[in-house]
Image 1: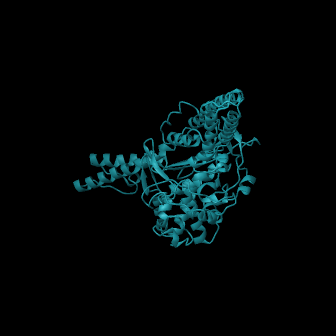
Image 2: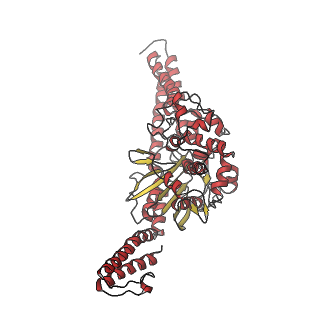
Image 3: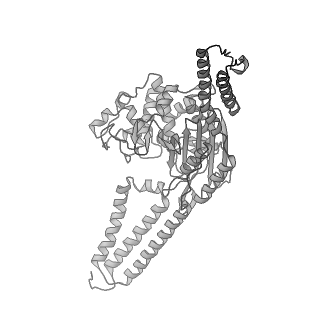
Length: 512
């Protein structure tokens, strides 16, 4: 309903109430085709109720109409300031309503080729892929081929974990991340691993807790769901998504194959290395499509969100029922600060209820935000990632959603990410300088078994203990944070060299 129509409807309702109070007759052409004859107190009362009902029914539409009257210049200023503060090389943003796109723009470049980002530029979605996977699962639920309360083993008889209780994990628990599968569960080796390989990699993994007892965000939940979609539908997961979600929703800039996405102009991913955004292309991960590796554009995510806001339908194509969409947006488990539904988080942004999900991989970040009561959806995609600092994409998406709903965005962080990363780089330089000074002193110092043991012990703890602490090996650390990984290796080498020099010493004397 447009703003003009909303105002007209409210005016007609007010006229109906006013005419009743004055004891006059309102002609059919100004009473929405319902002639009102004021001949008795009962009819007066009925007419007044009709007018009030018209006013009340029109107010929500008026609110929605006002909410989409967004300030393009304010969004543009907000986005460019955030990009500058956090050194983001490229970004795309879209704002949609149930009826269409109201704002779409690209900022910066795709990478070293200098191509300008547009709303149609594809990016890697990261965990926003989970929202799409949840829709695929619900489609099969509607078709009667999956039951949310059924155990995983009903569909994957070869699903086995080290904990016997894993046989009780249900589809609903996978969707809500309440299965008990730990966040740091083992993954299949190799970038070409399949979803079947990823499920098999869980064989020797113990559950963190009893299924259904708590929420622990764990990407393997959605890899198992993706495998279930494959087995139940008979199609590879990527093929299923392309045919039953991307195609009917007209998502023509969305991809399940990395080579196809690159040919179509996939934005070059970047990683922040010592405060500088450095282009870095990482291998595709077909075995992680359901949880982190689907690719799409801001404009296509706008279409996906419009279908969600419209109860599963877009341009005559229905990809889910209204009840299924409502179920996907209903929290299955409440955590402090938000609820987790099916591939979506639910919390508040300002005064509005938000259904949202972010995505973070080593070289891309993004977020989708929907405000269902206002009929607004926002997607922000960036081609850079960092293990330090809050995600720029998430703050921008929340801020644009606030602007689109007539609110002010949250204040920017006091310290821009670029400054934080530069400070970290300076800290690394200082520590390395101190290590080099220690190395020089060790070459001149007398032999000391105690000092040597401390240096070498530090190296052993660093090289063996750090992978255990973070939950993945050196290959994954290099993938996630090459700058920090490189520095740790340099620190270990310098520490080992210092220890060996203290063992050798410059005399035969022993000192502690």
